[in-house]
Amino acid sequence: MFLDKLIGLFSNDMAIDLGTANTIVSVKGKGIIINEPSVVAVQHDRYGVDKILAVGQEAKQMIGKTPLNIQAVRPMKDGVIADFEMTERMIRYFIEKAHSRKSFIRPRIIICIPHGITQVERKAVKESALSAGAREVFLVEEPMAAAIGAGIPVSDPDGYVVVDIGGGTTEIGVTSLGGLVLSKSIKVAGDRFDKAIIDYVRQNYNLYIGERTAENIKIEIGTAVKLDTELKIKVKGRDNSGLLSTIELGSEGVRSAIKEPLKEIATAVRNVLEDMPPDLAGDVVDNGVVLTGGGALIRGLDTYLAEIIKLPVHVADEPLLAVAYGTSQVLNEEELLKLISNE
Ligand SMILES: Nc1ncnc2c1ncn2[C@@H]1O[C@H](COP(=O)(O)OP(=O)(O)OP(=O)(O)O)[C@@H](O)[C@H]1O
Ligand SMILES: [Mg+2]
Image (tube, rainbow, N blue to C red):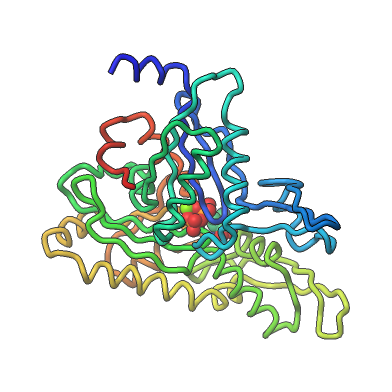
């Protein structure tokens, strides 16, 4: 309709990848304008009132370092909305930050949500966007957005498998004809690797480290396969006696630390492949499997997975941005939006 087009011209329609680890906002015609950790820092005052001190990068810096009256929370930990109110406030903060004050027309907002969230949570996400000023809200499933962002031709009558390894969840989706033919979500992803590293360092070195340190170890030296040259990193933590101490950790150690969660991901992918209708399975033999999400950046994960599922595995370009690219493509293509958004 002409009026719709006219409105579209003046509004800042936006797409949000609401991830458990990172939230990425893109605005139509401008691309990605916000890419920040999904973290909120709140201060509790004497009267029990919570005040938001920081959101995003600034709040993430505070994790594990806050005084008693300040809390840095990840409201969407473990693939679910753990803290409803904080999630809502975070969504509102990002929308307000992205929405240009000059625009007097309320935006349409596409939100990519973790696959596993409940109907009630979907409704809450939708309502927080509406109350933050959205004119209309569309929800898109993460595996679908990841597939589109990775360049998979999702509307083709051809089966493709995408595995999105995020912070909270790994989502496996099989797309064909604009829909998800099969999908599976497990709560094993980046956060679980971090947890496994914390446990490993404690058990093998008697050293206590926090989440931030564990994530850093994973990014710096984490690997799913044996490396030709082992990587090493110095790790600072607290030992049994409570004293500060430094150890040297090698990539071999990290590999054995994350062995279990890696295996769980591989098994989940295998189960999806086993459940596939035979004709689609045939397509997948040719097309292989595409990895997206920050977890796909673990060294050698493609090789590791290919070995187990006996299919070609590729990591998407810029896996951390695949879902955001996918949602922003949906923002630009009305047909695609009609095809894949759901309530
Ligand atoms: N270079 C890297 N190597 C290994 N892991 C990485 C790397 N860079 C980021 N990560 C991990 O990727 C995860 C975040 O990925 P991503 O932004 O795709 O998650 P998300 O979309 O917020 O989460 P979800 O999709 O589960 O809701 C974090 O666990 C982070 O530690
Ligand atoms: Mg994600």
